[in-house]
Image (cartoon, rainbow, N blue to C red; front, side, top):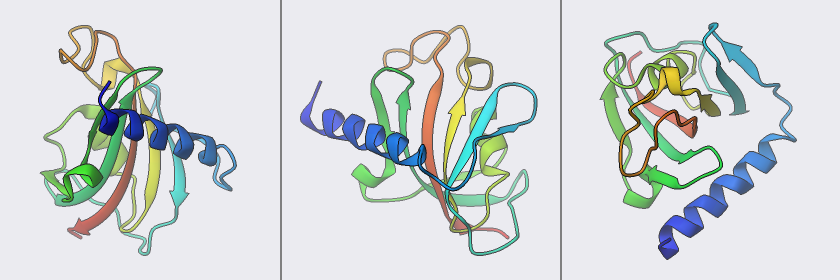
Amino acid sequence: MSMALSQLSQSLENELKGAEDSEFPVKEIGNEGLTKRILRKGVTWQSPFSGDEVEVHFRGQVENGAALESSYDKGSRFRFKLGQFIKGWDEGVATMKKGESAIFKIPPNLAYGEEGSPPLIPPNATLILTLKWCLGVP
């Protein structure tokens, strides 16, 4: 594993350990296994809707496995239209408030499923994403 991926993996592990002490409980979103733990409350009451363009910072990893991409490492936020990414990501971001940071556990059925996304994401992988909603509509 490269030095950068090793550091990212360690950073995510530290965030997850810190989240265990969070004042916010883990909440299930919907009924398909997506969970969320707020790390930092947002600054508004508004949440984005499908079709809204939003910008997030994120870190990701396969549960019990390899670190994935990180917008922090790239030095720029990830911009996308809500409703055009993996279902778990879209459903999770739709629950966020601007400025909020949260950790999401996305089961395979809401991520890349039985096929995975080789070479980084194996079949039936659960993803752990730390997201911060930075900008966007509303």
